[in-house]
Amino acid sequence: MKYKEIFMKRAIQLAKNGLGFTSPNPMVGCVIERNGFVLSEGCHYKKNIYHAEFIAINNIKNKHLFFNCTLYVTLEPCIHFGETAPCVDLIIRKNIPKVVIGIQDSCEKVKGLGIKKLRKYGIEVIENVLVDQCRILNKRFFTFYEKKRPYIILKWAQSNDGFIYSKKIKNNWISGIYARQLNHKWRSEEDGILVGRKTVLNDNPKLNVRRWFGKNPIRIFIDKKLNISNSHFILDGSQHTIVFTNTNKKNQKNIEYIQISFKENIIYQILNFLYKKNILSLIVEGGKNTLENFIKENLWDECRIFVSKIVLKNGLKAPEIGGFISKEMNLDKDKFIIKLQN
Ligand SMILES: NC(=O)C1=CN([C@@H]2O[C@H](COP(=O)(O)OP(=O)(O)OC[C@H]3O[C@@H](n4cnc5c(N)ncnc54)[C@H](OP(=O)(O)O)[C@@H]3O)[C@@H](O)[C@H]2O)C=CC1
Ligand SMILES: Nc1c(N[C@@H]2O[C@H](COP(=O)(O)O)[C@@H](O)[C@H]2O)[nH]c(=O)[nH]c1=O
Ligand SMILES: [Zn+2]
Image 1 (cartoon, protein in one colour):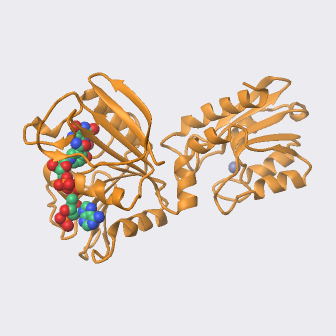
Image 2: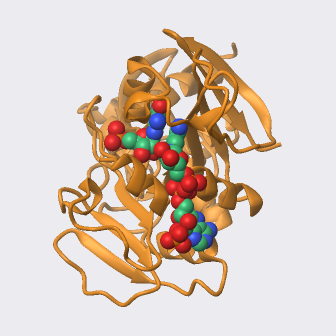
Image 3: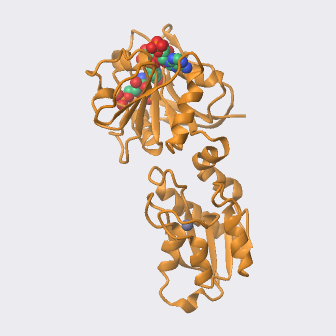
């Protein structure tokens, strides 16, 4: 690995500490290097608190150390006033002579303007170092700004012979305990989790994060005629929940009822609403009909399938999906497959 890539790799590693906590902001990591040594590091741990560059820069108390140093950052530094002051201005003020950037920001407020301003002030800027890795790091953020919708992950568990449900299985659990735990980790990383009405009726899911540490995603479900009764966990008000319905209903504690038209395609309306709510990512956990509606519209970015060793012979067939396998791993008695769009 080349010199620049080594420090950028470390910055990416630091950025990953923010997974599940930074949305709607991106995950960002920063390293300040001088003569081959790391002087300081920072990462954006949580939305509304310091940016990675701010932390790394403010760790350095001796201003003479900025002479001849290089700041590595996974994403173009910000130029706008948000919750914090622009990082570009801080870099200029500290006389940092060189900035190495992983990838340009896609958000309209920044989008190359940060780089332009740094160069205007005579700072040497090197762009696109480990650009592909920096893009994957913030796949949710880039999809949100470029496609104007959340990053969509479809997820289900299936038997070895391809069924997602059968009367034969106890409590509807196909995958094992480790897969369930991993699934809770996955939930903690996304802003929203969506299921269809029949899944709520059949499984009475909680859709929270209880087998892992982290925040709960916003629960979302489709219930055209408001058939789901308050006795279901999903309407217990324990976490923010959104119900997409045909019917006009007043919001309750932690429950938002959003009226949409079922005469038109509802997936686009849901995604549009979530985009306006700054929801960067969505995990769709079934059932078959709901997943297939996303697949039909080609509205997905990633698909995660748990494949169990059990054989069911009949039941509800798993959805069919294209894409290519990017990862396949064994997890105790199960296997999981991650597919990406071609
Ligand atoms: N193994 C696994 O990973 C999982 C298995 N399951 C299993 O799957 C089964 C449920 O799946 P399935 O029967 O397909 O039902 P779904 O859970 O997908 O719910 C389908 C219903 O949701 C509403 N809906 C969903 N998408 C749309 C859309 N685009 N437009 C309009 N309405 C929509 C409709 O409600 P309405 O009828 O009110 O119009 C539709 O009938 C359960 O048995 C459950 O146990 C569920 C999740 C995961
Ligand atoms: N059956 C099945 C899954 N089912 C999904 O998990 C939901 C239940 O969530 P919770 O109530 O929070 O535990 C259920 O409604 C469905 O969306 N998931 C899996 O990883 N493996 C499985 O075998
Ligand atoms: Zn910033």
